[in-house]
Image 1 (tube, rainbow, N blue to C red):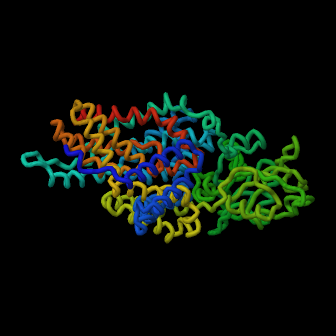
Image 2: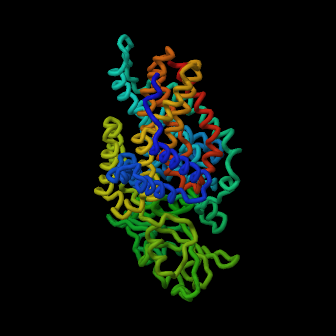
Image 3: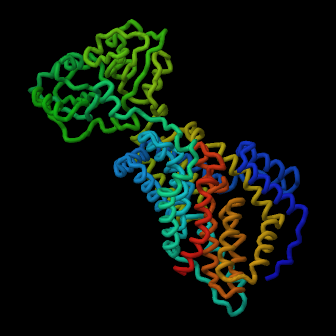
Length: 613
C-alpha cells in the first residue's frame, strides 16, 4: 500500500491541534462544552482552514435538521400522552424494580433503534425515561445512560438502523469499480444480514448496564434527586382521597333526579363528583347549581365497592368502563394537585362555596390541610386561611392558568403546558408516515422528518411556539459548530494522513491485529468527526487492507460500518448530544461510565463478524 502520497502540512498541524484542543476541553471541562464548540468554529474560520461559504454549513446540514425535526415530533408525541402510556406500561411490567427497569429501558429502545434512526429513537424515549424517573424516584441520569447507549448498540440490528450502515452499501457499490482485475465483486448486504452482530452487541450492552455500569456511576449522578410527582398513594395517606373514576348514569327512578350537584354531594354516602354530562354537554368540576336529570352521567371517584353500593341505593347504572370521561381523566390532561394559600390571597376569609371555583376556574376542592388537621367533608363551608394547603382536581391547564393570579401557589409538579390526548391518533399517524418514508428514502431523511414536524403543527398537535420551545438549541449549536471540524479534517488531508500512517505500520501485522486496528481507528474518527464521515474515510482503506492480507473484503467493510457506531463519548453523536442536558452529565461522566463499554465494543465487533461472516 502506498503511504507516501500525502505530505504533512501546516494546515494538517493546525487542524490536528484544534482537534486535540477540543478533546482536552471536553474532557477537562474548564470551559463549557457549548462555548468550546463555537470557539472551535470561529478559530477554523480565522485560520482559514474552512472556506467562509462552508464555515456555517453545519447549521443547514441534514444531521442537524434531522435532530431538530425529531425533537419537535418527540414533543408532539409527549403532548398527546403517547409516551405516558409507554412509561406506565414499563413501570407496570417492571413492578418498579430497578434491574427490571434497566432491562426494559435497554432492550425495548435498543430493538426499536434497528428500524429507526438513532436520533428519532432517543427523542421518543427521553420523555419516557423522564416520566419513569418522576414516578419511581430513580435519578434520570441513571436511566438515560442505558437508554442512549443501547439505542446506539441496537442501530446495528439492521442495515437501516444507523447512518453508517445505510451508507455502507453505497460505498461497497462504488468500491467495486476500483477493485483490481480478477477480484470478486462485493455484494451489498441484505437488510438483516448484520442482525447477529447487532444482537450480540445489544445483549452485551444490556448486561453491562445491569451489572457493571451502576458501580462506575459517579456518586453525584447516583444520588441525583428526581422530581417526584404526587402519586395516588400519597393523596390516599395524607387526605384519605382514594379510589378509581367511575361513570354513573341517572335513571328515571333515581332520587337524584331534580337535585343540584350541591344537594347530591350533601348526602352522606355520595362519592366525590368530579365530572358531569347533561345532554351533549360534558364538563369537569361541575358547578354546585348544576341540575341532575334523567340520563345525566356523573363521573365520580371512590372505591368500587362503595360506588356500587351508592349506585344500588340511588338507582343508578354503573358502567363497566369510562365512555364519556376517558379523555377528561387522562393523567396527561388532568389530575390531583396541592396548592398553598399565601398571605395576601383574595381567598383568605372566604368559604370555598363563595369562591365558586368550579364555575369560574373549572377546579374542584377535594380537601383542605390546615396544620395537622385535614378537612374533607365540610369543605364547601370552610373559611380559607393563609397557609392552608388546598387539594384540587382539574385540568392541568386550568390549574396553571388560574395560579397566575397568585391567589395560591401550586406545590405539586404538574404539566404546565396544555396536553392534547384528543390528538393522539393524529400524532401517531403523522409520526409513522414520516418514519416510513424516511426508512425507504434514507437520502431524504431530514426532509421526511421535517415533513412530520410540520404536519404535527398543521393538525394542531403542537403550536408553532411550542415547536420552537421543543428544540434544545444548546444541542443544535454544539452539533452544528463541530461539523466544520470534521470537514477540515477531510479537506486538509489530516484524516487520510493519520489513516495512511497507521496502515503503514499495520502492513505486516497478523490479520486479527489488522482488524482490531481498523475497528479502533474507525471508532476514533467516529468520535471526532461523525459516523458517516468515519465510514466514508475507512471503507476504501479497509477493503484495500483485506485484499493485501487475503481477508474477506466484505467482512472488513462491515467492520467499519459497525465500528462507526462506537461513539459513546462526544456530541458528534446526536444521541449523546441530546441526553447531555436532561441528564445533567459532564463529559467526564461518559468517559467513566462508557469507557469500558467502548473498549469492550472493539474486540466484540471483531469476534462477532469473524464468527458470522
